[in-house]
Length: 349
Image (cartoon, rainbow, N blue to C red):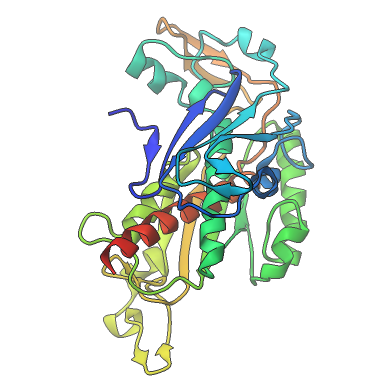
């Protein structure tokens, strides 16, 4: 089955291409009587909108329209349809490379799979596809707000610069959603340096969930951590996911890794808030490794659609890094998983 649908109890199906008419999402399973307006969704879309400082110069207003599922300011329980029209499309830069595969991009795999591809900005494989996810995540956020679950996403590494502290209050005060004021200054310098080099950089996004109750997650194959990993790995630029202590657990003794339990709670959180695939009531901590943007000016070797060797240098309106615009996307995907499992848990208890 085509992989454009995500979730079970709270199900979303996204559509649209980077340089097409519009992108959008159908949400099925949203509870009725939830207060919802376009501004609720717009607030989240603003966080990933292009055309801001340190991002691509493509200027999209990303204004959302609610087509169905809301009446008199409240959800009706029927499918919610959201659409975001593309307003600043310029495919001219792609004309010269429409028959050339970009290294590191999905051009070659889409072509191998379907025998045809939308070369205008990457079509469905473009990072622009994620605007629909953020719109759906904004609706999920409204559901989570009602039960006191909060999701925070922020940058902890970018181009080799790493944070040393985590100030959640600083996240919304800088364009990189960095959680460390000192590291932010270095990250900003790094982006400017790399832009002049004609290259790109990657980084790490951390997501923290506060207020999640114990009991979310379905054994054996729909474990909460498995679902979170799948959700984040479904974002095009993400190449790795770790939860809690992550890969560091491989170097620990059991006595170090185990989170001892007291009547007041856990003494540590190496598990990242999830045990046996089920939330344990502690903070959920998950990190996503984000690869560099593949479209770069530096000349690289590649082949054409006919298999002939050539070189490519890509110009146009591209980000230097998927960070910061991928940060709200990560938050949206985590929210979608939590709402889906929250609703599934209500069926059980």
